Every structure is written in structure tokens, then in C-alpha cells.
Length: 424
Image (tube, rainbow, N blue to C red):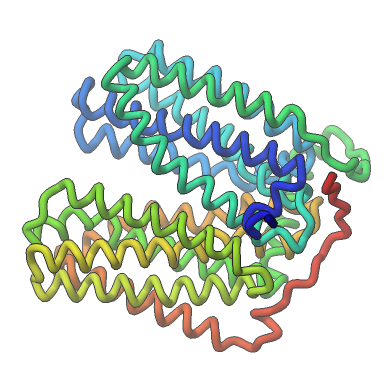
């Protein structure tokens, strides 16, 4: 019996190693996330200000360090970057055990996130160099499925471990996951890259910034990349404008707090199902068209959710409608999760992949920090339901508008690199 289409990228040994490392460290990250939030909110009783500080310390490095991290991810050997980042994060997480107050924990969180900022573009570049170009969509679908699986398994396991062995046990388990991931990634072998021309030491600092600027110029000069970044940035902003208001919406509909967990689970399940479907049947679809379709469908469902909130639909009907809508939003989101990295990898030559992957995330991350405040202000002025509805309308409008761009811009997918990928 032939293997399902979504698993075909696993025929490449290097991609199997990457996927194993991603799954193990992903579960560990969610263990870490649950333990840190529980420690700050419950054991130390730091309230909303402590949780906000945690959120800031895990977001700012992505904005401040991404341009330089992308350059170093391109300059340094891929495998070394991946392994060293995993080892460093293992040591840092073990340091959490020694923290007995918020400030040192925030310092270590910032440091750990800084290594994640370097790891992420190197991983994106590794995928590009690991699978054949025709398998990129399937590889990213499988990566999305893996990520969504860790979101389901990790928090559940983290909660059980935290209740049983406390934060210390959870942090040790997370550190062990990074060590195991490093063991898998240390077995990776990549094709030799061309030697870079030598530079004078006095010019080193300027060279880093000039290379970052070169990555930015590449993005802005390539229509498909630029459109994809703008689509993702607009989606992130609009999603985070309403997402943090979900608990308020549930309260307005007289639904219990447990419903929030069901909704999050429905989104995660939908994303996993959507990623599996794309990996199985999505080969040949333009990744940018996939993103636009996903944004349009998600917008319709979000707007519909806003109408449910505004119309004050209560009881079983509200639960059913919201559960179905959240599942559908998750399915739609998978189109963005799969299409976006596929565009970056297929449109970018290997020597620029680290910079493009890092820089393309700066604007969405910055908007992610701004959006909740904008959404809260709108909710205070107009109500929670209208924020969902307006966000959904804008998502749908942008998706449809980009869909009607000239086909030459949407379907451009010429490989800009000459990559040789081993499949044995």
C-alpha cells in the first residue's frame, strides 16, 4: 500500500531528523509555557502585570534581534546553529529552577527567546535544503501538523507534570527535550555552501547590517514575497485584535470558562485536520492563493462569530455555533501556516534564506503586540461582537482583493536557487 501523500517528505532522512527534533522540542516548549505561566500566576501571585511581563519578554527579542539573527543564520553552518541553540536553551531552562522571583526568570526568558530567534530562520533554511522543491508544500503541511500536535499534547502533559512534580520537574523535562532534539539535529548533513569572500575586521559590523538590508531589499523587490508578508501581517493584526477578547465574549453569552478550552482545542484540531488535508491533496496549489483562500474563509467565520455574539445567542446553540466556527477557523489557519513558509522557501535562494525568514516575521510580531490594545479600545467603544465582525470583514476583504491580483503575481513560483537535495 502506498504511503499517504502527506508523509512523502519523510522519505528524505534529513527531514525525518528535522521533524523528530521539531516534535520533541515543541512538546518541551509547551511544558515550559504551562509551567512558567503557572509559576508566575499561581505560586508567585504576580497577576496580570506578571503575565504581561512574560509576554513582552518572549516577544521583544523577535522584533529587536531578527534582522541580525537572520544574517548569522546565513553566515554560520546550519547544523551548528541548530545544535548550539538547542544546547543553550537546555542550559537556560535548567536555570529556571534556580529562580525564586520574577526578575531573574524574565532575564532567562529573554535569553532563551533570543536563541529561539536565531534557531527559527536556521530551521526554515534547513527545510529548504532538506526536501526537493516539489515537496516543500507537503513538508510544511507535515511541520504544521507536528506543531499542532505538540499544542495538544504539550499543555496537557505540562499540566499533569506541574501538578505531580512541580515546576522543577517540568523544567528538567523541557531541558531534556532540547538535549534530545540536539542529538537528532547533530546527525544532519547539508551540502557545502560556497565560501564567502573575506572581510576586514573593521568592516564586520557594517557588513552585518548591510547583509540585513540586502535581505530586506530582496523581500521588497520580489512581488510574491512582499504580498505574502503583507497578507500574513494583516492576518496577525486582525486575529490578535479580537482573539484576546474571547473570554469577554464567552461571558457575554453566559458560557462557562471551560468553553474557552473547548474553543482552543477546536482551533487546534481544525488546524491539524487542515494541514493533513493540504499535505494529502494540496500539491500543485499556488501557496499564495492558498493563503488568500484561507484568509477569506477565516474572515467569514470570524465575522459570523461576531454576529452570534452581537445577537446574544445563548445556550446550546451558541456552543454549537462557536465550536463549529472555531474548528473552521483552525482549518483555514492551516492554509496560512503551510502556504507562508512554502512561499519563503520556494522564492528565496539558500544564501538569503535565514535573513528572509527572520525579517519576514518582524512586522507580524510587532503588530501582534499592538493589536490587543487596538481591539480592547474598539471593544470599549463599540462592544465585543463588533470587533469580531469588523475584523472578519477586513480579513475577507483583503483575501478577496489579493485573489484578484494579476495571476502572474499570484502564481509566480520560479525557484530562485539551484538546490540539490538528497532523498536517500
